[in-house]
Image (cartoon, rainbow, N blue to C red; front, top):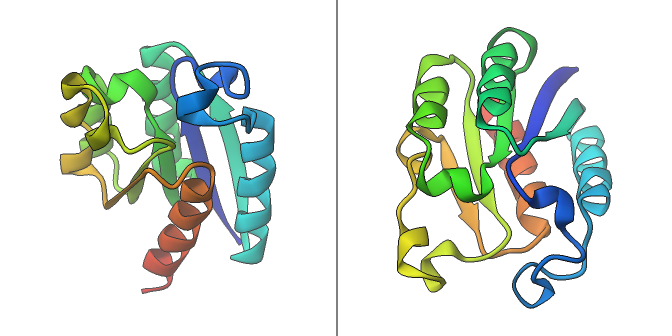
Length: 145
């Protein structure tokens, strides 16, 4: 059984009450349950975390390099600003899947650029909470290959 890290960036702790027209009513706890179930279905344990702090996300990515088989990350707003996350993902040797609840390309222009996408194994956006499940399934398939 391999371990998969699921990392969540800033403001995702407010899911369920924050901009429900964009992000829906699903809470981060609901998404954690979805991820745990997807991990179990794929024979993997899941470490699920959220932080509003960029450096903590970098620390967890570096930790994942030795403690996880792969990472699913929703970097939140750091997607569009963080060269530090880009560099951390590039530096580690495990595959990373980028996921977003909303379609970032259908939103404001500044959200159309991702510093994470060029160093991610794959990207999912616009599928709501189901995107996390798809990311875990995709990562599990990549790990089998």
